[in-house]
Image (tube, rainbow, N blue to C red; front, side, top):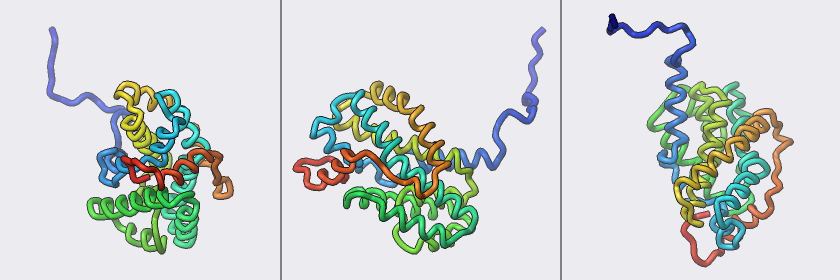
Amino acid sequence: MLMTTNEPPPVDGRDGLTEAEAAALYRLMTWLSPAFPVGAFSFSSGIEWAVEAGDVADAASLRDWLASMLADGSGFCDGVVLAHAHRAAASGDDAALCDIAELAAALVPSRERQLETSAQGRAFIDIARAAWPCEGLDQVIAACGGAIVYPVAVGLVSAAHAMPLAPTLHAFFHALASNWISAGARLIPLGQTDSQRVLAQLEPVVVATAKRATAAALDDLGSATFRADLASMRHETQYTRLFRS
């Protein structure tokens, strides 16, 4: 005979999330969702020029372009400064945080990429502070002393909310790849299934890049994606444009 009960199943300590873990996951999923209003949909990080020039023409070439940007270009650099900003904010090292914010802003290779990362950083700070205020957040924002680019903004806000670095970094890279794929899908164009295939194929690149960025020193910053940097510069004078970068 089948017995039914309204009692919840027993929890052995390995099922479910703690309250703090659930809150952190909820915030990361919200802050790094394509729906979070930082304006990421209006930027292409130079991909628009790459499509115009014929460097990116289908799902395979988009995947290769983005894999290089993640592993050897702005993706890796953004991950490194996010990690260092997170650690400086978490430890209360205002001087180090200020230096990291200044360095990250100086590393951006073109005017439009500077607009992209600074506009998203400012929007991320403003919205997160308005909707999720927390003790100490204003202090770490003030410690930066100037413009806060997007990866630094994500690093310091997540640290102020006591979120672990590892999931924050992985969520950041997922958001970065998703936004780039969204731009490529509209420009090439690609269907939704092909777009998801590209995202799936980038998974090992994201995992490996996050691991490298976590362990990297600031002296390890650097990129070898000259064509992508050139694309972001040439996009500034591209005749017909859908995106702001």
